[in-house]
Length: 157
Figure 1 (cartoon, helix red, strand yellow):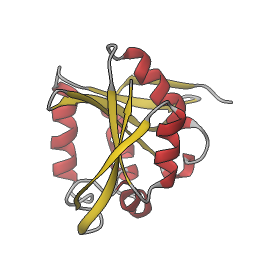
Figure 2 (cartoon, helix red, strand yellow):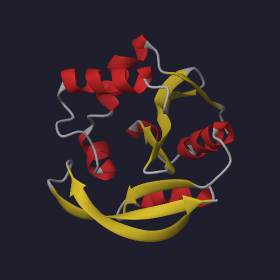
Figure 3 (cartoon, one colour):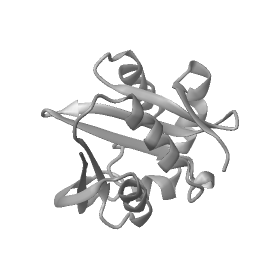
Figure 4 (cartoon, rainbow, N blue to C red):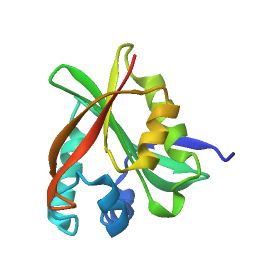
């Protein structure tokens, strides 16, 4: 298995991140995305907020020196959550699981939550392999699908 590393998101990553986060199939699977994934100004403003916040973690995922996605964590309503985005050509190669494990090592002890569209079997599999268990479901508006959809809520103690 190739080595995955996490590092700070750098300015030279932004063009590639914008492209991977507007890939139509990736956006559909993620479901809960930006209102308009093709709006570069909104993307740049969002990433600038993420990079400047001391309240969250936003890291680049690099495999063999190549940027392949992002992983992050934040606290919402007192609960730590995690998220990740893997560029579609790299799906199914174990990268998300490796990146998630590296992120979890950096986080303070305590429960961690995650959410995924219920029909996103790949993401649910990654989270369950990382020790997350399903604790419920919720319904929310998914910008990428223009509709309310079910999302699965998971927790890792």
